[in-house]
Image (cartoon, rainbow, N blue to C red; front, side, top):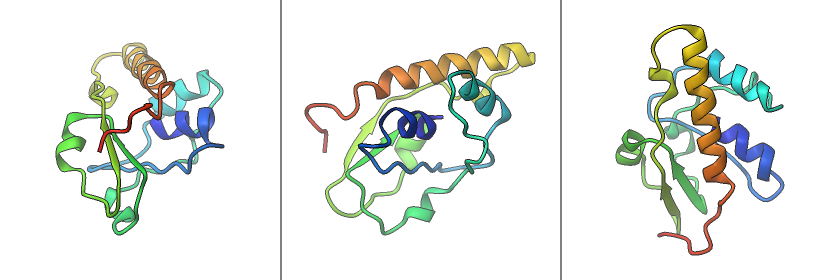
Length: 123
């Protein structure tokens, strides 16, 4: 969801890539809640961070504590920024309950990304 949000809201300012430390697939709940805000991520695919090995990035954003701990080091001067969000894929219960969690996390990520990049990058 973070990739879709950043591409939509600031894609003209950034080249955006997204990957995970344990990718599986783009969850249908994520596709549904992103569609609610006019963003189509149905063609996105889950990628592993190793696909980007050897590339340099100005910023690496991690959005869960596990990713922060296991994210590889990228070459060059990379500003690593971290903000932990609940993992919506871990939500249990009815479809309505799961969609509610995905919506909440989507909104939290979007609010966080509205302030990106920070005025004083963290190294």
